[in-house]
Image 1: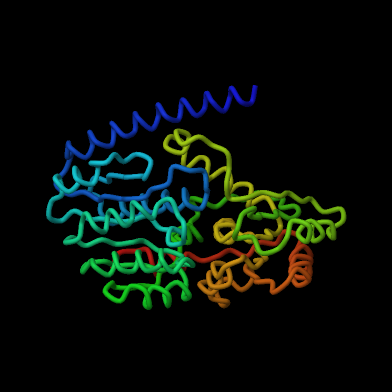
Image 2: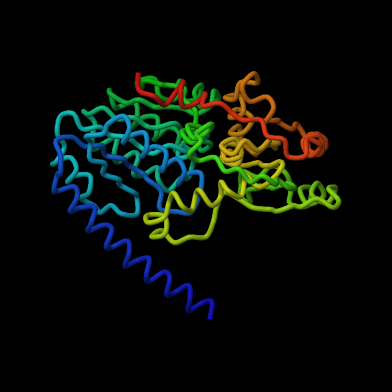
Length: 348
């Protein structure tokens, strides 16, 4: 039965992708306005962090470029001639962006599209939105570095200092900028704040992939220390078909934010677990990941602004102690400011 269900879903997905490819090419070839934003590598998968970035960038583009038509180009929706058709329809004043996130590691499925975009629009300004950069394979590092350095009008934004330093070493012909993850623009925004009124327990938002630092056994032992406390284990990846994201992106993200708002404390090794908790003013205890993403990422949050709501644990013993201290607050809320939106995401 499960096998039949999977085959059916796979068939429906293929039909949906074909429909979206046709829709994309019709949009490319039929301009509705004088100016466009071409937004490459937009996500079709169910990672909440990537989808939340997508939501936030669309909001910011609409705020800052209200007259622009936005053309989103996911890897799965492009054909062999998609970039050629965009090139053919490109006009002066159009803007080219590549989606933010953790796309600059090896092997990432979006890397081929990034390199193709940089090659196809070699004489046109391109902005790569905030990235974590963590290449390991020397051959891939060399290929990406050589191809991006061949572009004379490339801006690469980095979302942590380690990535910023790596970008400066790898991409000496690009303009390198340091910029926080765009989902931080929701922090302090009352339109995304949910007041549960009865926060209870601990939400463990934990990854289960190669970036995981602590073993499942050790994390389970940490959870077992909290006797009589409401505990839930979740992740920032949910099961939803790609058409659900296209139709219900904001609703799906808001449902997750509501859950983060119902707990006294979040314990996470997910970068967007940190950010989602701060959107909802829920204190968070941050665990290490296998790379620099979290240890560097928490440095964005000034202690004088977020010191009551963000704590980095150097080990699981410290995580236990910090979580216990927060539980003693009995759900008291300290509201975060709109500091990120005001300092990084308003056009000046």
